[in-house]
Each structure stands twice: as structure tokens, then as C-alpha cells.
Image (tube, rainbow, N blue to C red):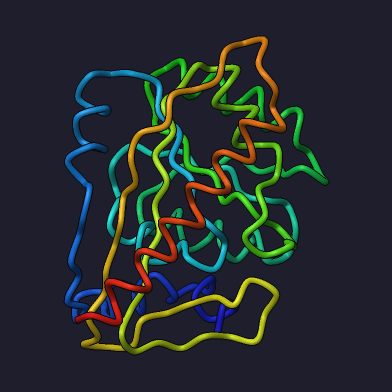
Length: 211
């Protein structure tokens, strides 16, 4: 399924299916306020929970850091067709050069998007890229995730979730998280981001079950 989503026509499938979703968005005003203030901003999500945030934020001057692995190539095709710019690299391949390019893009006013447990997991475990990028750019971090009443969940490492057509979807943007100080601990900051994103995912699941 991820191969299909990253194929030539995958973005059209996402647009068609996405148009049928009944999305309840919570917390988007926080994202809009930060972007309006021109403050540096890094958005974070989990690999398996990227689809609805990516769909909702399409075409809004976001640059996404995507791995150079095979799965990353498919994700890159999808997000580029949805109006994102991409920088290729990850913690295991091409990361240093990609991080420098992402810092440059943030400095130029673009919002950075990071898929924080990619490219190969472990699932829901924060890799160092997002906390490093936020610390170095002194960017505010906004976590984003979703849950849905009816879904396809794939048997991949990330348990990739796609809402079925006409399903109810809860899309949550979390509270803004200030960057840690330039001399602060990347490990502690990364744990803070991981905890925040996992709590938000649990909250999304609870709200979806209540729909």
C-alpha cells in the first residue's frame, strides 16, 4: 500500500480518499499563530501517523526531511506531489548534509517537517534529527498526529495507518514545545518530544473512539 501511495498516481488517491474523510481538527490555531509570527517552526509526527497531517498541511511552504531509503523514496514522491519540498537524508544516511540544508531552509522562513521514528524504527521512538534541528535553529516544535474510526493498518514496522473512505478522523496538533537551550541535552529534549507525541497519539485514539 505504501508503494501505491508513493506511485505516480498515489497523490491522486490520497486526494480522492481525503476528500471523503470527516476530519475533526484540534489545535490548528496554535500552528497558525506560530507561522503568522514568523518564528522558526519544526513540525513532528510518527512515520505511521503521517498521512492525515501531510494531507491537511499540503501546499503550505513546508520542507520535509525524508530518508534516502527505499521507503523514503516512496514517501518523497507522495509529499512532493502534495506540494511539499523535500530534503533527503536520515540518521543513518546523508544526515549531516541534510540537517545543514534543513537549517538553511528554516532560516529562510520555511516550516520544517520531521518524521521522527523513520526510516526503520523502532516505532514511536524519537531519532535525534528533530531535537537536534529544533535546538540548532531555536525553533518551536509542534507535534501532530491522528486517529480514525475506520482504518487500514499495514503489517509494516510503522503500522502505517490509512483512514478508510468516509471515516471520521481526529487530527491533533499539540501544545507548542519551546526549543531547549543551545547547551541543553539533546537526549533529554528528544525524550520530551517523544513523550509529547506519544501522549498526543493516545489522546487522538481516545477521541476517535468517542466519535
